[in-house]
Length: 640
Ligand code: WTA
View 1 (cartoon, rainbow, N blue to C red):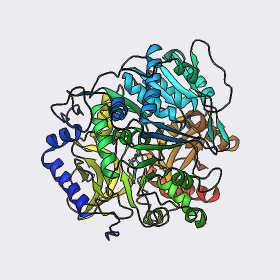
View 2 (view 1 turned 30 degrees about the horizontal axis):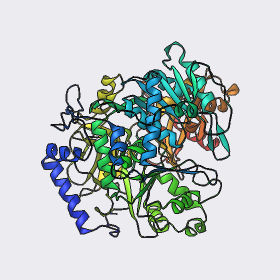
View 3 (view 1 turned 180 degrees about the vertical axis):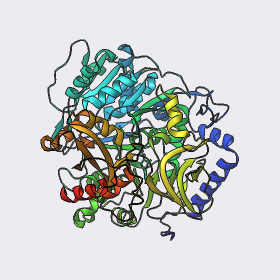
View 4 (view 1 turned 120 degrees about the vertical axis):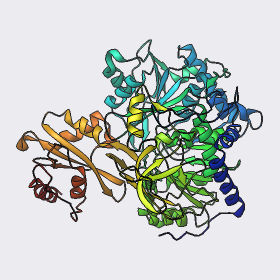
């Protein structure tokens, strides 16, 4: 297991430089990060790097006295050197839909929208929601917000109206960008209708003054006069130049909602300065970025991966990004391989779920494609098994590409643990080594640091530039969620194992977060949604291993009256409250849940029973009703 795998692409020179960075960042963090920050364009250079402190109230502050604009860093500063270089290559899911935007053109499109938003009254510091599929306008909208100092909140197309309403209300978004409708293979997603519904649900608490509707399809949608505007028509009247707002490094660049073990989704707040330094630094370092690269991160822009590696990292570094609208295997298997071949993609960054699905296809699918433009492959979001790693390396990379498994989180802003391409020798299945400046450590259940080889809770002993500063309007929750499990440390929610030479293996979440195909789902959100169904007394959602999705979601439900209960009601409650993407794999109807005498649900037992892992169920005598265990086992067997 600790065998290193080959040395694909690792050069002594890159390895040496990387090693020096790790040393320098540890020995002289202030100087190291100020030096990295100089790679960006500032209105005022910062004079100090971190003023962060994980004790007391918890402060995360990077480059506090610096001033900059994120969209200028992604656009304007490249205009003098490479105005005609492709910044964004877009392909639609229908054959022949392709558009290439140079830096000059992308800049103009961003400026037009920025001017429009200003004219519509959007102010610096206000939130703008972006609810778009993978079209160029999604990227344009993010950068246009950054340009005028509006805080973007990108919302996943799969959220239900209820889920959207909750996030619109919490962020106080004043403007929403949506599509008339979106394509997903044969299906149409009614984006505008869902947004209309969400705004109605916000009721009095809605701050939305305008909805800009991007014509993604030819569907005609109803428009509310005075509130809704056709995007294409409105931007065409704006000038292609727009002065950028000067932002403090600590001004929020965006909020992004993510799930935790308790309560409703929380809006993590990312800073302008620290985040941009981290995005640019990690993109260049992890993917060994070259000016000739065509970088394709397949993540949706509504996830953190899309923020950092579709948009901010590669554009800050003057790269060319690939944005593809469609599914991997629609209209036929191998569609994504064709996208790579047609566009000369050099760096392909995707999820283990995509790799596992591709492995199941006929091997002729991948073998019939050239894929020779590829140089670097990456995965993120969930562990990749050594088997999938090797398949990715051998079949997609044809044995010629570095493969980087990258561990990180919405909260971390960018990659934290990886075997940086061509610098660190990877071990298939291992996240590998912390990046320069990442003070990863393992703590045991008592909060004592594990030294050398061992296993424990994965924590960070110090801040890094990409760290989220707070939770939107709830700093107490931020402190409580991340800094109390292991005092004076940021606690990731993951467990990990470390080898004697420092390589990390992520063992998975130790809290009640389930990772379905790389989507973070809080079990509490699922249970809250189910609780709206009056036929249900109580429920518990747990994750179980799943061949394709990594984890699958399973729900145990205690009905009020067994005979008249319809499990399908549970699906619609989840679909309505959270979104269709979170509908459980399986629903088990049971008489009761296993609880301690103090009434706490013993999820560990439910996870094992649902996964048919009946060995070592542990001491059951502490349960309020030990007999329930055999009933649960029987119920799971029966309802298979
Ligand atoms: C999991 C996605 C194993 C982990 C960027 C983490 C991983 C959560 C990996 C964050 C990986 C992410 N190996 N597990 N390479 N990458 N995870 O916030 O449990 O959507 O805490 O960020 O995904 O998910 P999030």
